[in-house]
Length: 355
Ligand SMILES: Cc1ncc(COP(=O)(O)O)c(C=O)c1O
Image (cartoon, rainbow, N blue to C red; front, side, top):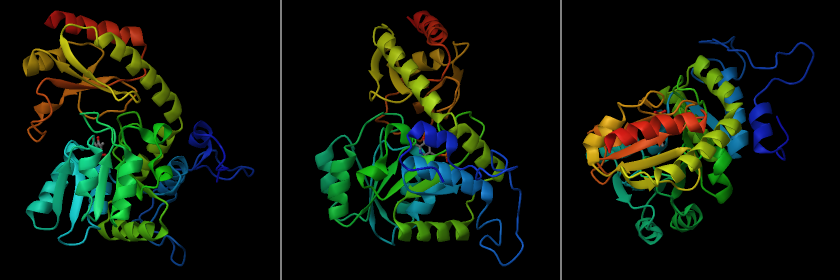
């Protein structure tokens, strides 16, 4: 277990490793096991695995809490929403990740809970909505609108009203934002994105400092069985080793791209919260121009998802479930770690062709 006073880059490299004893491997092996010899702590493959535990130790150390990994980000989301008691209210951003909003809509349609969707940039409105809520869901920045919530203010009001507060920290990563240190109850991740970082893994995670919540969630995970694949957990931990370098480089590239994109005549709006590697642009000529752009580049790959080493982009409204308040011509860019000049040359030439 690394010293908690270590800095994040050192924690990313050193946590979740075997003890330094002669002949120990430097990395935990991939333990493929459906069951274990009886009488220990693990017993069965759905209850635990040493490779998941290594990933959980590392992400827990980075977020400052205890971590549970899940099969996907959405199964982590579902496991948290499953804790909401029958008939209670959940406050959530109207522009939260579409899969989260769709889960809330599905639960509401089946009479399980009331979903109250808010504009998370309007702190007053969010705080007023928290009054009778049992769970306040925050995602900051949001996907793909890139809105930022006032986490400390909302957290304080929500907890005073008796609600639990969750932050989806997928976009910021624990390197740019540590919600548990702001007092929120739970952090959720799509580890599919930056944490793994190579577009080859689906994985989710929840982190908390509350031992009771940890126990309840672990029990739900055991019962539901939304557990990670062993290879996936191992790959995610391998990805985590370079998280600080990847986040730093993609953020540096994103900031420079924002500066250049703001001057391009084909673009009517550039959205960037000031940190991270995701940028949303709105094409002045709308959906057709946006679709054209995503088919004209050579390096930028047209694909959903984000947070990989490679730069990718997509027009979000190509998904029928994306809300109408997201502009039709909005293209979300996931800025990778390539050379900025190559990224810009490719994007600029496609944008110039549109104009
Ligand atoms: C912010 C955010 N949260 C959760 C998810 C869901 O994660 P997964 O695709 O790993 O299920 C995503 C996926 O795009 C996301 O962007």
